[in-house]
Structures are given as structure tokens and as C-alpha cells.
Image 1 (cartoon, rainbow, N blue to C red):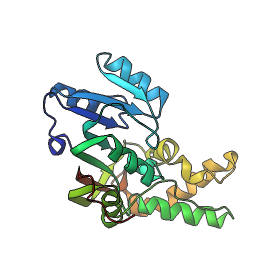
Image 2 (spheres, one colour; image 1 turned 180 degrees about the vertical axis):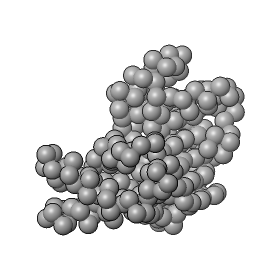
Image 3 (tube, rainbow, N blue to C red; image 1 turned 90 degrees about the vertical axis):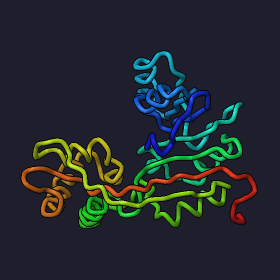
Image 4 (cartoon, one colour; image 1 turned 180 degrees about the horizontal axis):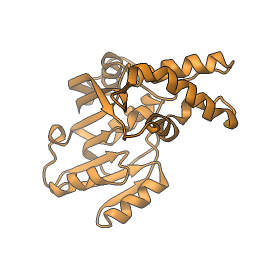
Length: 234
């Protein structure tokens, strides 16, 4: 991701969804002035503690603004958490200078497809509604969204990335508790543990291999350039 961004000394870069700041620091090491933003007070607090010399701000991806434009906006493993993708892209375009670039990677179409399918089966079997809490677009969907906001796509990739989870038989339930709790939001809290076990049993034949759990990640990676006036009709 960072070679695709290719930060250079002196430019301004916005790290959208910076988390605890490791990638923000990597960009700063290249000589760029980097501002990291995140909607989590805990993440911003950790980033400030880790890298007190860098600039971090608490901000929502759908509602951020800056007085000075950026040469680039970078985002890694964040944008699938924000369902209002239009607001995010509108904000990204609003803070880029003409010719500025946008580089991002996040969950794409079919990401965690097996998990979502299993969750839907289990919830509906228990008379509960199912809702996908994430935003997983196709390359075509996302490229069209970017182009509507004057972000001309130079390159885009959509690829599978089967990923091993931590060792142990409880790794899948830990992943669901940490990252996938939104899929069980319609269930009463006392019922969620048993629902998680049911989801896990459905997934076992597909995602448990040689004593280890895997997650069926699918990623989108995009590189775009802000060209005011180039957008599709809105």
C-alpha cells in the first residue's frame, strides 16, 4: 500500500482511519507531513501515545474538514466500516488539491461471504432479522462512486486473501466478538453466545483447516486522482 501511495518529502497526507498510527508514522518517515484521523477516542489516544511528535485528530469519516488541502488521502482496512460511502468520498474529494491522489484498500464484494451466509441462516432460523453491517462494493460500484466526485480511477484491484486467524479452536468466535458483533445486533445479548456457536459449526467445514481457522477476506485496492470537473453527471 505505501509503495502505491509513494509519499515524498514535504507533501501533506491525510491518513483516514489511522488507528494506533503505525502507517501514519511510516509515511512521516518518508518526510511527508501526515495528519491521522480516527473516529475512535481510544485509537487516537493510543496513536498520540505511540507517536507524540505526529498530528492526530478525532474525526468521523463522513464529517471531516480541513483549512488546507492535502496532496494525498490514504486509507487502509477502514472504509468497509462506513456504510455512508457517498459521504466519505465527498469528504475525500473536498480536502484534496487538484491532482491530489487517493489510495485505499478495504473489504470488497464477497468479503467474509461464508460468515455472512452462516449468520443469515442462523439468525433467520431463530426468527431474527439479518443485516450486513459492512459496506463491501464491487470494483465497478466503487469506481462509479469515485468518478461521480471527480476522482478519476487510475487503477483498481479486487482479490481474494484467505487469511489465517490466531491459533486455537476459539479463534473464529473471538473474531466474531471483536469484529463481527454487528451481525448479531438483532439478537438479545444472552442469546448471542449460542448463536455464535451455531455460526461457527456451519463455518467449520469450509474455514477450519488442519487445526486452524481462516477468514475468507476479499479486498478492493484503488488508486485515483482528483480532477475537478471530470466527474460523471450526478
